[in-house]
Image 1: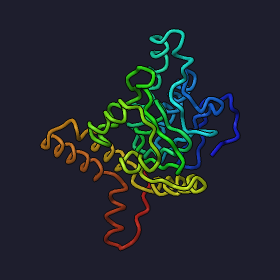
Image 2: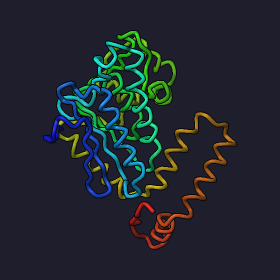
Image 3: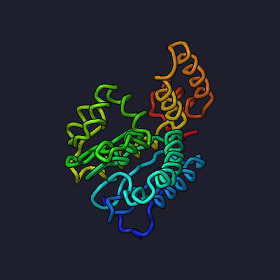
Length: 264
């Protein structure tokens, strides 16, 4: 799970055709996110967001953990300024990440705590190693949550369980996370990377524009009444109906073949 690239580069961005892998790369600090990492994450997401060939994105961490929260040294001297310096680029990066058509897969091992857990919650799919531990952790520092946790967590588990996770600051196991619906699959550590790669390839072969439409509809659904949501669904379906992938899917159905989607 640990790439051997330069540990001085806080975020590594690699491509394998239509699949991008973004690795948080401060292994000596359990990938705790500091200002340089937040800015590098934003730079990477700006690059990916304007790339029409991207069809799946994998997030992972180097070393022993996915991400052990925010870097406390950034916040210790001047907490208010440190928080602004960290959260402005991080928030923009997360907005870009959740807006792209390509599905986002979080590959989680070791720890996902604080901002690491918040970031994980924004992914479309989450696959985790069996021995992973999770803790929202902000309350242990006397802070409220950030990086979108207050948006994502109630949507995933409901308000009452979200408050329990956030306000008690208790550590969760991978089994707890699966039971609560925080993750999609729990895997043996030696199977995690292969399963993530298989899922990324499967998604990268799918109708990327339709994935993006589906993601936006699902994310917006809690904020609209039924009639508004129906209208948004209709508009999204009409947009998808104009794509090459839609025509491919229709012809494959009638031809009784497997559609070869191009993400167009």
